[in-house]
Each structure stands twice: as C-alpha cells, then as structure tokens.
Length: 207
Image 1 (cartoon, helix red, strand yellow):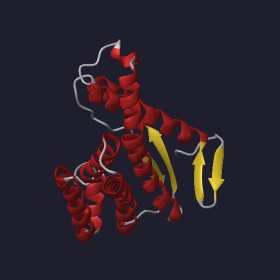
Image 2: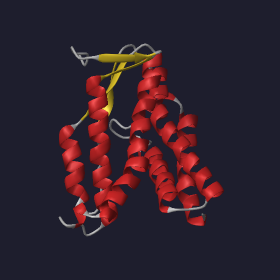
Image 3: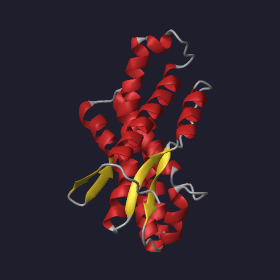
C-alpha cells in the first residue's frame, strides 16, 4: 500500500500529501538541474556557479520542470476522478542517474511515477494514461501561441520543443510507458496524440 501515516491535504476532489509534494519538488529540481547541465555544454565546477547556469536552470525549471509536473498531475487527477488513490513517488536512484548522465550530454529522465490503487479497467487505464501526454500537448500549444503572438525566444522555443517531445516519447508503446496502455484502449486516440506531437516538433523548423 502507498497510503501511510502522513499529513494529507484536500482541495475539492483533489487530494495530495506532504510526501507527494516533497517528491514532486525533488524530482522537479533534479530534472531542471540535469537539463540545465546539458544546456550549458562543457560544464565545469566553476560554470556551475555562474549566472549562465542559473539562467539555464530557470529555463529548464519553467519548461521541462513544469511539463513534467503537469504531466504527472494529469494522470493523478483523472485517476482520482475514478475514485482511485493516486500519488506521485520519486525514484531517487533514477534522479541521481539523470543528473550523472547529463554530464555526458544527454538526459535519461525517469524521475518517478504516479502510483495508483483502485479499480482500473482497460478503458480507465487508457484515459488515465493519455492524460499525461495530452497535458504536454496543451502546454506545447500554449508555447506555440506565445511564439506566434509575442515572438520567438529560447524560453518559448524550449517550452514548445520539450513538451511536444514529452508527449511523443511517452507514446512509445513499450514497457510501462503511457503509449502501450493508450494503444490497447483506443488506437484512434493514440494516432491523434502521436500525429499532433510529430506535427509540433516538425513544424518548429518553420517558426
């Protein structure tokens, strides 16, 4: 069981807890650090203390970090609406691995997952699973709208790219990724999410 003796909070039908908030914050910071290291390129101990690294960290935190948190909350909210217990738990070893591998120039991000307990059939599982990538596509469209209305910059461009990529990556129909569950549930919904993700990523070169 994932339910323990810790303080919980409730806002309407939305339920969370101290440990979930702590795990989300921990994963958000770790992912942001990892992507900031990759963005900084050729990083050294001295550059970790530079204003450029802080700037890259803030970009990562409000694009990658927000995309990650909203992705997980998409799963959580839909699961809770089905009456399930649903809380995010960070995987500490994977967070450390993500930071370590970022020094090699890429990020392997598997920060954790929303743990769900309750009655979940094929349809419910598909809807819960598509909620995460769906949120990322909405965020990508928001960043696209900001680019078209306010002009392009690295913040908007990175927000569009990373959220479209998160939407597409999570639709890979393998292992415990969302794509496998969505494909089993509804092939049309699966194809739509993949098509929009590819369109957003491909269309970036024309912006």
